[in-house]
Length: 93
Image (cartoon, rainbow, N blue to C red; front, side, top):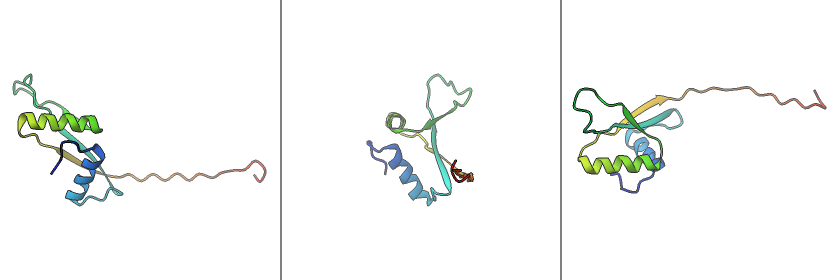
């Protein structure tokens, strides 16, 4: 269950737990298709991404207004980039 006052970080935590996702190995992106009276059924509107607390609140308000609004969960594997950094001291070379 998602509460009205849930934060973005808590929502991500719920998704990670519910789907059994390891956040050390994966990135999770949340989005939804905004219902619009301007759509006229001709084209699907672009996804609205949820990236912060304000956008979570906006999604939940639209969910209450429409009764049904799918939350899209995109999971991407983390790319691990390792940089070797060597510190040189001017005295020791």
